[in-house]
Length: 193
Image (cartoon, rainbow, N blue to C red; front, side, top):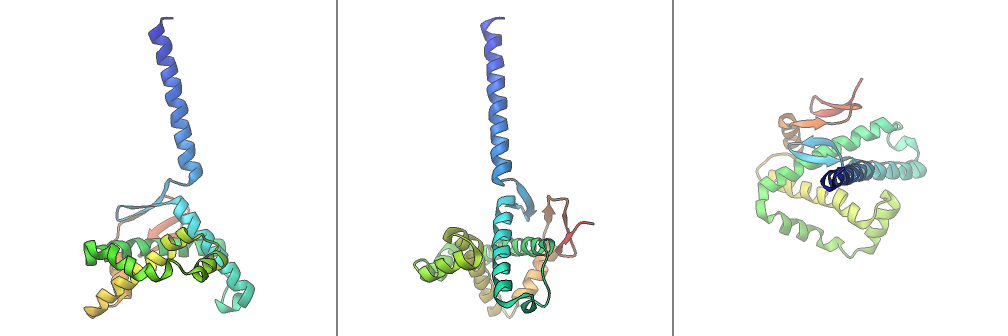
């Protein structure tokens, strides 16, 4: 076996090991897509993080108030559906508010969220109520809510309602769910049968 053939084998081996390592990192880290909303990729990691926060919040609510506060108990599948639908709405609102305000979005969000950046009580509440660290709470809860508030204000100024806008956005949205457990039907996520 000549030297060139031996190096080719080593290179192929190293490439296979590298590809396997990268694949493991993507899968184990949850960086693979679970759905696509108007070309916005939502990762499994984001879904799992939001699902964990919703579960944590639900457990805290039921510990304090019992199942009666919601009128019914939620099972894991119902909570997953709610989280997926919320992620879709957040994605649509993020695109909508960006279209409405353009390059002013960062300024408006910064202005709206500035008062919370040093609020230790809010940071503590994020940990205790949602089980989230501050950065995840900011990314997953505060920024989507602030974006929704900004969009709602713009729509209100034109005499429109956010609920109607979201319903229209869902009707026109192209949503691809990459999980066999769920599908997009009638402007919402449904459990597959």
